[in-house]
Image 1 (cartoon, rainbow, N blue to C red):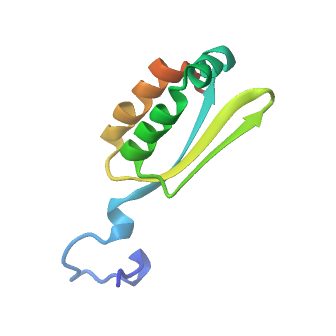
Image 2 (cartoon, rainbow, N blue to C red; image 1 turned 90 degrees about the vertical axis):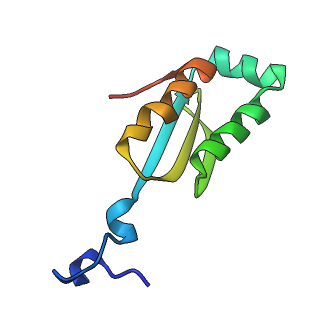
Length: 100
């Protein structure tokens, strides 16, 4: 069983799960017209399957927020360098916008 970080000692031999993996929440706000076209064409199921395969999310939720299609994915991120690999396909396929 993995020890909490606070319970580790200086003689610990390697990182624990808590030190290696970062839990992430991805929120994608989809362009309404582009997303509607993806759904009309029947490509939405394939696109969502690709997202699930790439992220292996613990949870994936789709909903409408302020008239826009939105989805949340909760997943583990092993390395921050994976962020562009995860986000770039979303910008192209779904025409997502990001909030800052």
